[in-house]
Length: 264
Image 1 (cartoon, rainbow, N blue to C red):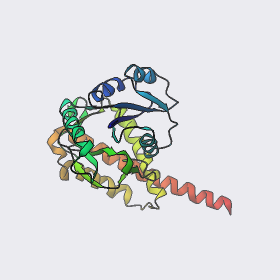
Image 2: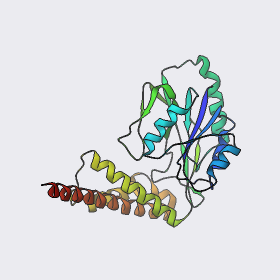
Image 3: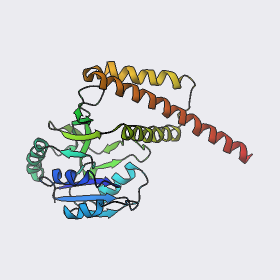
Image 4: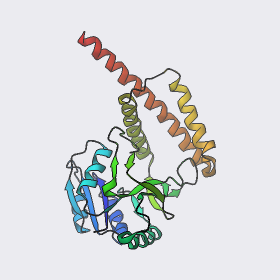
C-alpha cells in the first residue's frame, strides 16, 4: 500500500463527502479519525465512501495527526481536512509521483509542500498570506512526526528533505461571518495557550503593537490589497484577534499568579 489519505473530523457531514470523493482517485486507503463526540452523520458518510473510521478522542491537532500516522497503513500519508479538496490537477501530479515511489530516484525526500487556494465567501484570495499558503501535508509516514507542544498551525518534524508540488489543494475556508468569528476566536485561544506553555509573557504594548503589525503585514507586506475591500476586512479581523490572543495570554498569567498566591 503506497498512499493513505487521512482526515481528522468532528461533525463534518456538510463537507466530508466531497473531501473523500476528491481523494478516491489517488488513495489506496481512506482513514478518518473521528471524535466520538460527533453527533451528526459523519461516520455513515465516511463508511459510504469506503473509509476506515477510527474513534479517537480529541486532545490536540498534532496529537491526532500523530495518531493518524500510526494508524495508517500506507508508506505515505496525505493529510486532508474535511473542508479541503484535492483538485484534479493535484490528483494527477500525485499519481505521477506515486508511480516513482517503489524505486524512486530521490529517497532523501520525506515530505512535500502543497500550495493551497483559500476560498472566502466563494472567492479565492490572492494576497494577505492566503496564497500560495503552502501546506506540508504529503509525508513519508516512517519519517514524520508532529510537535505536540504546538497546538495550532501544527509543525511537522521530518527525518529527511522537503520538496514542493506544483498543483493545488482547494480550501473552503469561510462561508459566513459567524463562522469566521468562531474560527478566529478558537485559534486565538489555542495560540494564547501555546505561548503561555512556551514561557512567553504578556507585555502591555502587545495589545496595541502586535495587532497593528498584523494588519500592516496582512494588508501591505503580504499584498492583501490585491483582494480589495475583502483583503482589508480580513486584515482588520486578523488584527483584532491578535489583540484577543494577547488578552487571553494576560488572563492565563493572572490565573497562574492567583493560583500561586492561593497555594501560599
